Image (cartoon, rainbow, N blue to C red; front, side, top):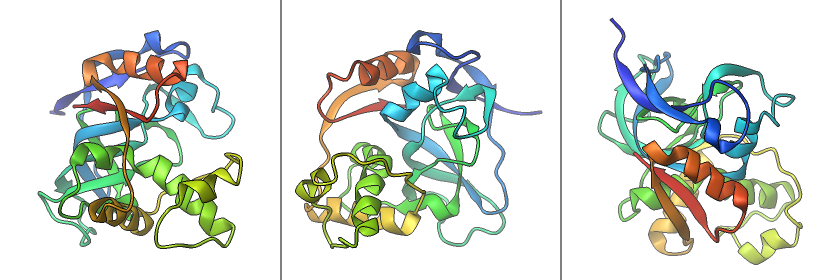
Length: 219
């Protein structure tokens, strides 16, 4: 018998108010996937755009779906091919998959181990959950422009006018960003925290565009 978890789910596209928090089946864990007990899910503008249906031309979508691509939490199950992390490890991931359905606004999420980075000592798990998409976007933009540096420089990123970058999951690069957080070279500014039961409100806050810093969902 399948066990269940709480998750923020949409059954139709629309405003953040279409989000309902309900019980769904636990995710399945593939051979090279890890199951993460979600502590924090970062909220990004792409999430409310997915809820609105704006990204259907970019990714296959399957309703009902759980939004969310940023995550930090604890590894609670491993696929048989996984050797890079262990049960109990604290990790973060940019959990975008090739289709949109099983996201991070949930108690559990299954993620490819290639997307996962262990949290270095000294990194707060809430900060870690806010890093993946935004941090990797900046790092990959600089890399694409030949501006590879040991520290992600906000001024350098601004030079590119927020030019569109199709960011890809990269556990190794994410690990480097988290080490910058641990060393104090990269700071995470949190704007507002919402519990999972208020996931729709978190998306609405992001959509409103008045927040300065990252919105996160704590589970």
